[in-house]
Image (cartoon, rainbow, N blue to C red; front, side):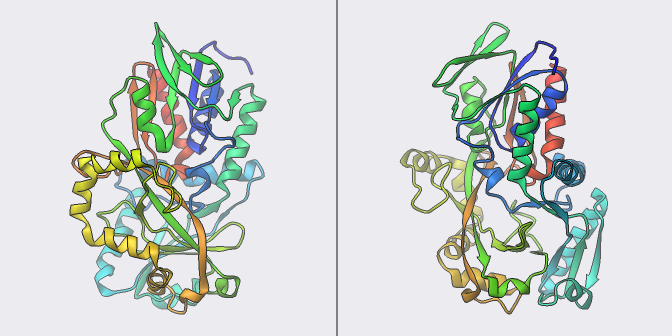
Length: 397
Protein backbone atom coordinates (compact mmCIF):
# COMPACT_ATOMS: atom_id res chain seq x y z
CA UNK A 1 0.00 0.00 0.00
CA UNK A 2 1.33 3.45 -0.95
CA UNK A 3 1.79 5.84 1.96
CA UNK A 4 1.93 9.61 2.25
CA UNK A 5 5.25 9.37 4.11
CA UNK A 6 3.80 10.28 7.50
CA UNK A 7 4.83 7.76 10.16
CA UNK A 8 2.41 7.04 12.99
CA UNK A 9 3.20 4.77 15.93
CA UNK A 10 0.28 3.18 17.78
CA UNK A 11 0.92 1.90 21.32
CA UNK A 12 -1.38 -0.96 22.29
CA UNK A 13 -2.45 -4.10 20.45
CA UNK A 14 -5.98 -4.43 21.71
CA UNK A 15 -9.01 -3.96 19.50
CA UNK A 16 -8.92 -0.14 19.75
CA UNK A 17 -5.21 0.13 18.89
CA UNK A 18 -5.52 -2.26 15.94
CA UNK A 19 -8.66 -0.52 14.66
CA UNK A 20 -6.93 2.87 14.91
CA UNK A 21 -3.94 1.50 13.01
CA UNK A 22 -6.29 0.21 10.29
CA UNK A 23 -8.04 3.58 9.98
CA UNK A 24 -4.69 5.36 9.69
CA UNK A 25 -3.38 2.87 7.15
CA UNK A 26 -6.50 3.46 5.05
CA UNK A 27 -5.55 7.16 5.02
CA UNK A 28 -2.12 6.38 3.64
CA UNK A 29 -0.09 6.55 6.85
CA UNK A 30 3.00 4.44 7.45
CA UNK A 31 1.84 2.61 10.59
CA UNK A 32 3.73 0.77 13.33
CA UNK A 33 1.93 -0.96 16.22
CA UNK A 34 3.80 -1.75 19.46
CA UNK A 35 2.28 -4.31 21.83
CA UNK A 36 4.12 -5.33 24.98
CA UNK A 37 2.60 -8.82 25.12
CA UNK A 38 3.32 -11.75 22.82
CA UNK A 39 -0.13 -11.78 21.19
CA UNK A 40 -2.92 -9.39 20.25
CA UNK A 41 -5.98 -8.78 22.48
CA UNK A 42 -4.02 -9.89 25.55
CA UNK A 43 -6.00 -7.89 28.09
CA UNK A 44 -9.36 -6.08 27.90
CA UNK A 45 -10.10 -7.12 24.32
CA UNK A 46 -9.53 -10.77 25.13
CA UNK A 47 -11.20 -10.84 28.55
CA UNK A 48 -14.53 -9.11 28.01
CA UNK A 49 -18.09 -10.44 27.84
CA UNK A 50 -18.08 -10.85 24.05
CA UNK A 51 -21.16 -8.62 23.72
CA UNK A 52 -21.58 -5.91 21.09
CA UNK A 53 -23.71 -3.41 23.00
CA UNK A 54 -26.63 -1.71 21.29
CA UNK A 55 -26.01 1.71 22.89
CA UNK A 56 -29.05 2.12 25.13
CA UNK A 57 -27.26 2.88 28.42
CA UNK A 58 -25.33 6.03 27.54
CA UNK A 59 -26.32 9.72 27.69
CA UNK A 60 -27.72 10.92 24.34
CA UNK A 61 -25.10 12.74 22.30
CA UNK A 62 -22.16 11.24 24.20
CA UNK A 63 -19.31 9.49 22.43
CA UNK A 64 -20.44 6.20 23.92
CA UNK A 65 -24.02 6.60 22.71
CA UNK A 66 -23.14 7.60 19.17
CA UNK A 67 -20.24 5.21 18.75
CA UNK A 68 -21.93 2.18 20.32
CA UNK A 69 -25.05 2.51 18.18
CA UNK A 70 -22.97 2.79 15.00
CA UNK A 71 -20.34 0.37 16.25
CA UNK A 72 -22.80 -2.40 17.06
CA UNK A 73 -23.52 -2.52 13.31
CA UNK A 74 -20.01 -1.87 12.02
CA UNK A 75 -18.17 -4.39 14.20
CA UNK A 76 -20.68 -7.14 13.34
CA UNK A 77 -20.41 -6.31 9.65
CA UNK A 78 -16.60 -6.34 9.88
CA UNK A 79 -16.60 -9.67 11.69
CA UNK A 80 -18.86 -11.34 9.16
CA UNK A 81 -16.93 -9.88 6.22
CA UNK A 82 -13.71 -11.41 7.59
CA UNK A 83 -15.06 -14.80 8.56
CA UNK A 84 -15.22 -14.05 12.30
CA UNK A 85 -18.13 -15.42 14.30
CA UNK A 86 -20.84 -12.90 15.18
CA UNK A 87 -24.56 -13.20 15.84
CA UNK A 88 -27.24 -10.54 16.34
CA UNK A 89 -29.26 -12.21 19.10
CA UNK A 90 -30.92 -9.39 21.04
CA UNK A 91 -31.24 -9.29 24.83
CA UNK A 92 -33.60 -8.72 27.71
CA UNK A 93 -33.12 -6.12 30.44
CA UNK A 94 -35.44 -7.22 33.23
CA UNK A 95 -37.04 -5.45 36.17
CA UNK A 96 -37.41 -7.96 38.99
CA UNK A 97 -39.10 -5.61 41.49
CA UNK A 98 -41.54 -2.73 41.34
CA UNK A 99 -38.79 -0.33 42.44
CA UNK A 100 -36.87 -1.11 39.23
CA UNK A 101 -39.77 -0.44 36.85
CA UNK A 102 -39.33 3.38 36.68
CA UNK A 103 -35.62 2.89 35.93
CA UNK A 104 -36.50 0.38 33.23
CA UNK A 105 -38.88 2.89 31.63
CA UNK A 106 -36.21 5.58 31.82
CA UNK A 107 -33.85 3.17 30.08
CA UNK A 108 -36.45 2.63 27.35
CA UNK A 109 -36.69 6.40 26.88
CA UNK A 110 -32.91 6.62 26.61
CA UNK A 111 -32.85 3.81 24.07
CA UNK A 112 -35.38 5.72 21.96
CA UNK A 113 -33.34 8.93 22.24
CA UNK A 114 -30.23 7.08 21.08
CA UNK A 115 -31.97 5.39 18.17
CA UNK A 116 -31.73 1.89 19.63
CA UNK A 117 -34.45 -0.57 18.55
CA UNK A 118 -36.03 -1.57 21.86
CA UNK A 119 -39.52 -2.09 23.28
CA UNK A 120 -41.07 -2.67 26.68
CA UNK A 121 -42.74 -6.05 27.10
CA UNK A 122 -44.62 -7.83 29.87
CA UNK A 123 -43.46 -10.81 31.85
CA UNK A 124 -45.39 -13.33 29.71
CA UNK A 125 -43.73 -12.13 26.50
CA UNK A 126 -40.35 -12.01 28.24
CA UNK A 127 -40.74 -15.70 29.01
CA UNK A 128 -41.32 -16.38 25.31
CA UNK A 129 -37.71 -15.25 24.83
CA UNK A 130 -36.39 -16.67 28.13
CA UNK A 131 -38.71 -19.32 29.58
CA UNK A 132 -36.89 -19.44 32.94
CA UNK A 133 -36.56 -15.69 33.55
CA UNK A 134 -38.19 -13.90 36.47
CA UNK A 135 -39.40 -10.34 35.91
CA UNK A 136 -42.26 -7.91 36.28
CA UNK A 137 -41.46 -6.15 33.01
CA UNK A 138 -38.61 -6.23 30.52
CA UNK A 139 -36.99 -4.25 27.76
CA UNK A 140 -36.35 -6.23 24.58
CA UNK A 141 -33.32 -4.88 22.71
CA UNK A 142 -33.09 -6.34 19.22
CA UNK A 143 -29.70 -5.15 17.94
CA UNK A 144 -27.43 -6.52 20.70
CA UNK A 145 -24.96 -9.07 19.34
CA UNK A 146 -22.31 -11.51 20.48
CA UNK A 147 -18.95 -11.34 18.73
CA UNK A 148 -15.63 -13.16 18.82
CA UNK A 149 -13.61 -10.03 19.63
CA UNK A 150 -10.21 -11.80 19.73
CA UNK A 151 -11.10 -13.08 16.27
CA UNK A 152 -11.80 -9.50 15.16
CA UNK A 153 -8.36 -8.49 16.50
CA UNK A 154 -6.71 -11.30 14.56
CA UNK A 155 -8.49 -10.17 11.40
CA UNK A 156 -7.39 -6.56 11.95
CA UNK A 157 -3.78 -7.69 12.45
CA UNK A 158 -3.89 -9.73 9.22
CA UNK A 159 -5.33 -6.77 7.33
CA UNK A 160 -2.63 -4.48 8.71
CA UNK A 161 0.16 -6.91 7.83
CA UNK A 162 -1.19 -7.33 4.30
CA UNK A 163 -1.13 -3.55 3.95
CA UNK A 164 2.51 -3.29 5.01
CA UNK A 165 2.15 -2.15 8.63
CA UNK A 166 4.98 -2.92 11.06
CA UNK A 167 3.47 -5.11 13.78
CA UNK A 168 5.72 -5.48 16.81
CA UNK A 169 4.74 -7.91 19.54
CA UNK A 170 6.84 -8.28 22.72
CA UNK A 171 7.70 -4.59 22.36
CA UNK A 172 6.97 -2.54 25.49
CA UNK A 173 7.50 1.21 25.32
CA UNK A 174 10.10 2.38 27.85
CA UNK A 175 10.43 6.08 27.07
CA UNK A 176 9.00 8.72 24.74
CA UNK A 177 10.97 11.85 23.85
CA UNK A 178 10.34 14.68 21.40
CA UNK A 179 12.87 15.07 18.58
CA UNK A 180 12.00 18.35 16.96
CA UNK A 181 8.77 17.85 15.06
CA UNK A 182 9.00 14.09 15.56
CA UNK A 183 8.91 11.72 18.53
CA UNK A 184 11.40 9.04 19.56
CA UNK A 185 9.97 5.92 21.20
CA UNK A 186 12.42 3.72 23.06
CA UNK A 187 11.81 -0.03 23.27
CA UNK A 188 14.07 -2.81 24.62
CA UNK A 189 15.17 -3.57 21.07
CA UNK A 190 15.56 -0.21 19.35
CA UNK A 191 14.44 3.41 19.17
CA UNK A 192 11.54 4.02 16.81
CA UNK A 193 10.84 7.40 15.26
CA UNK A 194 7.45 8.70 14.21
CA UNK A 195 5.74 11.90 13.17
CA UNK A 196 2.73 11.19 15.38
CA UNK A 197 1.84 8.94 18.29
CA UNK A 198 -1.44 7.31 19.30
CA UNK A 199 -1.71 5.97 22.84
CA UNK A 200 -4.19 3.08 23.02
CA UNK A 201 -2.49 1.39 25.96
CA UNK A 202 -5.68 0.67 27.91
CA UNK A 203 -4.72 -0.31 31.45
CA UNK A 204 -1.47 1.64 31.09
CA UNK A 205 -2.83 4.61 29.12
CA UNK A 206 -2.15 7.17 31.87
CA UNK A 207 1.41 5.88 32.31
CA UNK A 208 2.11 6.11 28.60
CA UNK A 209 0.69 9.64 28.54
CA UNK A 210 3.12 10.65 31.28
CA UNK A 211 6.00 9.06 29.35
CA UNK A 212 5.03 11.35 26.48
CA UNK A 213 5.15 14.44 28.71
CA UNK A 214 1.37 14.74 29.05
CA UNK A 215 -0.23 15.26 32.45
CA UNK A 216 -3.42 13.19 32.23
CA UNK A 217 -6.51 14.70 33.87
CA UNK A 218 -7.44 11.24 35.19
CA UNK A 219 -5.89 8.11 36.62
CA UNK A 220 -6.58 4.58 35.52
CA UNK A 221 -8.06 2.50 38.34
CA UNK A 222 -8.18 -1.23 37.52
CA UNK A 223 -11.44 -3.00 38.37
CA UNK A 224 -11.44 -6.77 38.16
CA UNK A 225 -14.60 -8.37 36.81
CA UNK A 226 -14.86 -12.04 37.71
CA UNK A 227 -16.92 -14.46 35.64
CA UNK A 228 -18.59 -17.77 36.28
CA UNK A 229 -19.92 -20.11 33.63
CA UNK A 230 -22.98 -22.30 33.82
CA UNK A 231 -22.28 -26.00 33.93
CA UNK A 232 -23.55 -27.85 30.84
CA UNK A 233 -26.44 -29.29 32.86
CA UNK A 234 -27.75 -25.75 33.52
CA UNK A 235 -27.08 -24.09 30.16
CA UNK A 236 -30.65 -24.77 29.00
CA UNK A 237 -31.86 -22.22 31.56
CA UNK A 238 -30.55 -19.31 29.44
CA UNK A 239 -31.27 -18.94 25.73
CA UNK A 240 -29.61 -15.58 25.08
CA UNK A 241 -28.68 -12.49 27.12
CA UNK A 242 -30.38 -11.51 30.39
CA UNK A 243 -29.37 -8.26 32.11
CA UNK A 244 -30.62 -6.53 35.27
CA UNK A 245 -31.71 -2.91 35.32
CA UNK A 246 -28.42 -1.08 35.98
CA UNK A 247 -27.74 1.36 38.78
CA UNK A 248 -27.44 4.69 36.91
CA UNK A 249 -24.89 6.01 39.43
CA UNK A 250 -22.34 3.29 38.55
CA UNK A 251 -20.58 2.53 35.25
CA UNK A 252 -21.09 -1.23 35.64
CA UNK A 253 -24.11 -3.08 34.28
CA UNK A 254 -24.44 -5.54 37.14
CA UNK A 255 -24.13 -9.32 37.09
CA UNK A 256 -25.81 -10.70 33.98
CA UNK A 257 -26.14 -13.91 31.95
CA UNK A 258 -24.70 -14.16 28.44
CA UNK A 259 -24.84 -17.01 25.96
CA UNK A 260 -21.60 -16.53 24.03
CA UNK A 261 -20.85 -17.17 20.40
CA UNK A 262 -19.57 -20.68 21.22
CA UNK A 263 -22.82 -21.61 22.97
CA UNK A 264 -21.50 -21.51 26.53
CA UNK A 265 -23.23 -19.30 29.11
CA UNK A 266 -21.23 -16.86 31.23
CA UNK A 267 -22.42 -15.19 34.42
CA UNK A 268 -20.95 -11.93 35.66
CA UNK A 269 -18.96 -9.87 36.00
CA UNK A 270 -18.77 -8.36 39.44
CA UNK A 271 -16.45 -5.37 40.03
CA UNK A 272 -13.68 -5.26 42.64
CA UNK A 273 -10.53 -3.18 42.85
CA UNK A 274 -7.52 -4.99 41.35
CA UNK A 275 -4.25 -4.33 43.14
CA UNK A 276 -2.27 -4.77 39.94
CA UNK A 277 -2.90 -3.27 36.51
CA UNK A 278 -3.22 -6.83 35.23
CA UNK A 279 -4.57 -8.34 38.44
CA UNK A 280 -6.78 -11.14 37.17
CA UNK A 281 -6.68 -12.97 40.53
CA UNK A 282 -6.67 -11.91 44.18
CA UNK A 283 -3.09 -13.13 44.49
CA UNK A 284 -1.97 -10.81 41.68
CA UNK A 285 -0.79 -8.09 44.03
CA UNK A 286 1.62 -5.25 43.27
CA UNK A 287 2.90 -3.33 46.28
CA UNK A 288 3.64 -0.30 44.08
CA UNK A 289 0.13 -0.35 42.62
CA UNK A 290 -1.46 -0.80 46.04
CA UNK A 291 0.50 2.19 47.39
CA UNK A 292 -0.50 4.25 44.36
CA UNK A 293 -4.18 3.39 44.81
CA UNK A 294 -4.06 4.02 48.57
CA UNK A 295 -2.56 7.44 47.95
CA UNK A 296 -5.09 8.43 45.30
CA UNK A 297 -7.79 10.64 46.88
CA UNK A 298 -10.27 9.79 44.13
CA UNK A 299 -10.46 6.15 45.15
CA UNK A 300 -10.92 7.02 48.83
CA UNK A 301 -13.76 9.38 47.93
CA UNK A 302 -15.41 6.74 45.74
CA UNK A 303 -15.22 4.18 48.56
CA UNK A 304 -16.81 6.63 51.00
CA UNK A 305 -19.58 7.31 48.50
CA UNK A 306 -20.46 3.64 47.90
CA UNK A 307 -19.37 1.64 50.97
CA UNK A 308 -22.17 -0.93 50.81
CA UNK A 309 -21.61 -1.50 47.10
CA UNK A 310 -17.88 -1.99 47.60
CA UNK A 311 -18.38 -4.48 50.44
CA UNK A 312 -21.05 -6.32 48.48
CA UNK A 313 -18.80 -6.73 45.45
CA UNK A 314 -15.97 -8.14 47.58
CA UNK A 315 -18.31 -10.59 49.32
CA UNK A 316 -19.69 -11.71 45.96
CA UNK A 317 -16.13 -12.21 44.75
CA UNK A 318 -15.35 -14.51 47.67
CA UNK A 319 -18.64 -16.43 47.81
CA UNK A 320 -20.05 -18.49 44.90
CA UNK A 321 -23.26 -18.85 46.90
CA UNK A 322 -23.70 -15.08 47.09
CA UNK A 323 -22.88 -14.77 43.39
CA UNK A 324 -25.53 -17.38 42.60
CA UNK A 325 -28.03 -15.57 44.82
CA UNK A 326 -27.72 -12.48 42.63
CA UNK A 327 -28.19 -14.62 39.53
CA UNK A 328 -31.35 -16.08 41.06
CA UNK A 329 -32.97 -12.65 40.83
CA UNK A 330 -32.85 -13.18 37.05
CA UNK A 331 -33.28 -16.96 36.82
CA UNK A 332 -34.60 -18.41 40.10
CA UNK A 333 -33.77 -22.03 39.19
CA UNK A 334 -30.01 -21.36 39.22
CA UNK A 335 -28.07 -22.47 42.29
CA UNK A 336 -24.45 -22.35 43.35
CA UNK A 337 -24.15 -25.97 42.20
CA UNK A 338 -24.87 -24.81 38.63
CA UNK A 339 -21.91 -22.41 38.30
CA UNK A 340 -18.14 -22.70 38.18
CA UNK A 341 -15.43 -20.04 38.07
CA UNK A 342 -14.39 -18.95 34.61
CA UNK A 343 -11.59 -16.40 34.92
CA UNK A 344 -11.74 -12.63 34.97
CA UNK A 345 -11.09 -9.45 33.07
CA UNK A 346 -9.67 -6.14 34.29
CA UNK A 347 -11.41 -2.93 33.28
CA UNK A 348 -9.30 0.20 32.80
CA UNK A 349 -11.56 2.79 34.39
CA UNK A 350 -10.48 6.43 34.38
CA UNK A 351 -11.19 8.28 37.62
CA UNK A 352 -10.88 11.92 38.58
CA UNK A 353 -9.32 13.13 41.82
CA UNK A 354 -12.77 13.99 43.19
CA UNK A 355 -13.76 10.32 43.01
CA UNK A 356 -16.03 10.56 39.98
CA UNK A 357 -15.68 7.93 37.29
CA UNK A 358 -15.31 9.16 33.73
CA UNK A 359 -18.51 7.94 32.08
CA UNK A 360 -17.57 8.63 28.45
CA UNK A 361 -14.67 7.85 26.19
CA UNK A 362 -11.88 10.33 26.89
CA UNK A 363 -9.64 11.12 23.93
CA UNK A 364 -7.08 13.88 24.38
CA UNK A 365 -4.93 15.62 21.75
CA UNK A 366 -1.35 16.47 22.65
CA UNK A 367 1.73 17.94 20.99
CA UNK A 368 2.72 14.78 19.13
CA UNK A 369 -0.51 12.88 18.82
CA UNK A 370 -3.60 11.54 20.55
CA UNK A 371 -4.10 9.73 23.87
CA UNK A 372 -7.11 7.47 24.43
CA UNK A 373 -7.36 7.81 28.20
CA UNK A 374 -10.71 6.16 28.88
CA UNK A 375 -12.01 3.37 26.68
CA UNK A 376 -13.71 0.69 28.78
CA UNK A 377 -16.93 -0.98 27.65
CA UNK A 378 -18.39 -0.42 25.06
CA UNK A 379 -14.97 0.21 23.48
CA UNK A 380 -14.81 -3.18 21.75
CA UNK A 381 -18.26 -2.53 20.27
CA UNK A 382 -17.24 1.00 19.28
CA UNK A 383 -13.68 0.24 18.17
CA UNK A 384 -14.10 1.05 14.48
CA UNK A 385 -15.91 4.29 15.34
CA UNK A 386 -13.28 5.30 17.91
CA UNK A 387 -10.68 4.63 15.24
CA UNK A 388 -12.31 7.02 12.79
CA UNK A 389 -12.56 9.67 15.50
CA UNK A 390 -8.88 9.33 16.40
CA UNK A 391 -7.86 9.45 12.73
CA UNK A 392 -9.82 12.69 12.29
CA UNK A 393 -8.14 14.15 15.40
CA UNK A 394 -4.74 13.40 13.87
CA UNK A 395 -5.83 14.92 10.56
CA UNK A 396 -6.70 18.16 12.37
CA UNK A 397 -3.11 18.38 13.58
